[in-house]
Image (cartoon, rainbow, N blue to C red; front, top):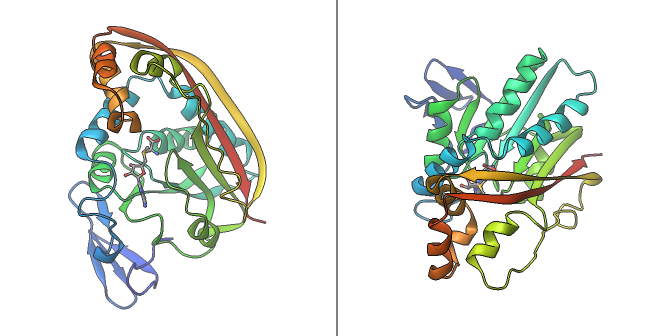
Length: 274
Ligand SMILES: C[S@@+](CC[C@H](N)C(=O)[O-])C[C@H]1O[C@@H](n2cnc3c(N)ncnc32)[C@H](O)[C@@H]1O
């Protein structure tokens, strides 16, 4: 599945290197990931999520409060296997790999052979993923130039990450499914009520931006979760975009809490390449 980011020819993994047909080669790091992000594909000096955000997300997700989201995505993939015995999956904007790894575990438990690639533009995120989870190809690359063959993927998973339709269309097989997870209207409502005086209820639907695909359905997942301990509450807040734009008094109030019960709500949109 993985192609050379420079000449786009096929690559082989030989020991600790990826080598393409034109002899461009890329080292596999001691953690097990490969960096295929070219310098002209970087949108900043240090693209993507920072080390601090990655660590906050990792520590928060490991507590299990978002297991319900992960289970929802895994069920959709399993419901759409169509008797395939081997599937190729890309998790784009995979972060530190929590969801990618849980999907792999679910498929392994069903004896479904899966070739899974996790791609993120953040080197720190991919290193964290590679350190924690083996048996997945972890790649630093950009969603706007995927180092993957045309029509090679059965599923693309895109969770809370950038929507770049053209590359998804190019790399999905015909009949392949694109699964996009976005925050729902009441996602983290009670957390926002602590931080902001007036909470804006907002909800993005990717359906219009992805209108080159056929939209199959939207699955809503909504449940309450109890976040225990100041550290977990801080981790949750620091992994969201609210960390960049919230009033200090509100954040201070939130960080004094020892426990927070809040709604988790996501919409999972399923698309197909016809
Ligand atoms: C909100 S996080 C979601 C991470 C993971 N999917 C999750 O739900 O835990 C968004 C991720 O997208 C990555 N990202 C941002 N722009 C990207 C791009 N152009 N290509 C690939 N990844 C990107 C960030 O580095 C970050 O890890």
